[in-house]
Image 1 (cartoon, rainbow, N blue to C red):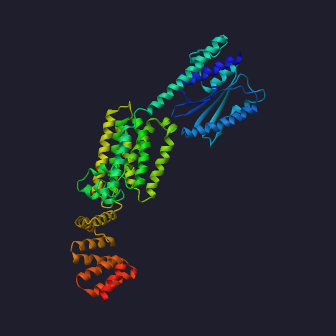
Image 2: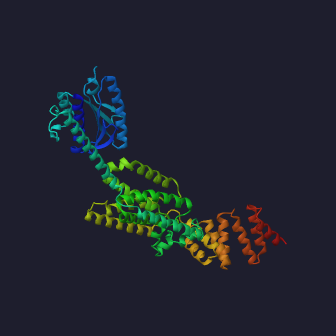
Image 3: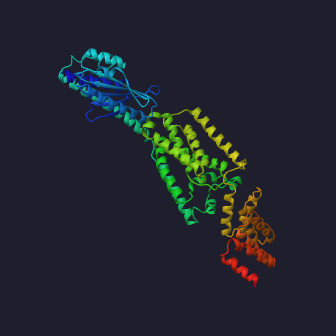
Length: 517
């Protein structure tokens, strides 16, 4: 009878903690005689372990306490608590037969006192129950049972009462679990799949029309290219989100969008997700425009905006965030941002711009069932003002990273397409910046030859070899100009100079032999 009475007390205690004190069930063993609970108070987090276990010997008690302390510390890290107070509660019919009081007099600590564990041993004796509950600051007199003593219950009544209390605990735990799961199932990833299809279609289209690695193709299909944006093609800030440079870029971004986009759309709902995605993508493109002169494309800014949205979710549901995805999100975000600072080819401006844009956009739309209309309007104004201010800065910032190499690359591709007038116009724009780059003068000379501007071409090839004497292609093209001017001595001298730096080039050898004859 004493054992059954104490079983009832165990479930009274657990039921009180779960249904009236609001503790969350972290874990239950299959026999339901060991339950781990969390008190969700941000200022003073607490974890409880309540175990119905008859402890006969103090050495067994000590061993179990040490193992429990280690598990408490693991839970502290898992729940992202800096410091936690843990309560280890034994509900035992009788105390150990040997000396044991010294084991629970002082709390146990681990991990530089970040986890502090107090131990309680509650026996069947009512006086002991009262003393330990006082230590725990738990008053079962306020519970639905009104009194701690169960002497007046008959056997069948106790069994029925145990079953009722147990079912209430299980139901409460299930309701809380379903409520948490519902947060992650508010929406379905409709727009995520639609965006994945869109970027896949655009990638195939690029590959069929010159290749996604070809700058000219990227620019033709809407990549971020600063001179054209400055000329009024602002739509490129949007279209760049759907283009990718190379298969690896496309594959990695699609994979990230599948996982992150799905998570954000399920949490925020489809229309909120679409707003966050677009604002983050535009923010990333504007940041790239403001700080980077390279041709840029990709969904990276919008994807980092999904990180920002998840961080916003973490602010509103801190405990749930860290119990589920929190540390993974933060670690992956830190790794990606670090790579952006270490690898020059990565446009980290777009990543950071997208992250901030997505984070602020989340405050505009808010999580489902949350409405703060004034704050939402203020955040919308803030997002618009920051975006416009960053765009204006990009219009006047002449010190963008990557300039002017990208323009030379694009000019070279235009020349390969025999678009000499377009290439020449672009090269003259670069020359206006008064940059001394040998490749710039060489490409100018090469273009001027095809435009029959031989005198200008001669000057630019001379300037090229002055800056870089080993530039044998410039020597050879200079020799061809001298042939056109019928200055064979100068032509022979120029081609011989080219052969000094590239003695096996067949065209150079043939031109020298022709001039010598």
